[in-house]
Image (tube, rainbow, N blue to C red; front, side):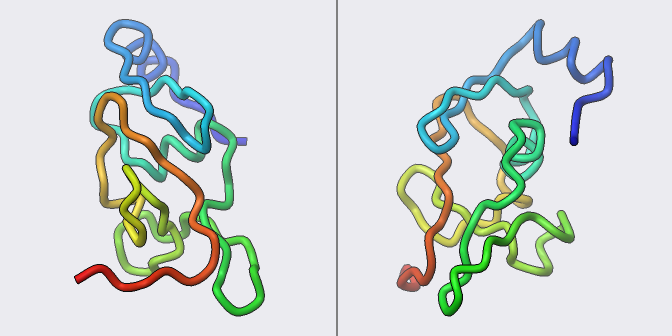
Length: 102
């Protein structure tokens, strides 16, 4: 469904950044947001709602809607659209309600 433009794909091949998404290695490029990496990897739902378990995915891609919440390096409630990938990052789908981190 989503794929990179050819020039962006070429950059992935030259300087790849490797992350783990739900236990699967994904190769992306420096400067990609976590949400965009999910789309390119074919993952459209990154969390489930706490009440009904409805799958939700990135929507606004600018930090307004909070539908892109994921666990990043074991920290819940991270907005995937606002976080840039780093080598070795562990990204996991967020299941239901999470406690607020203080």
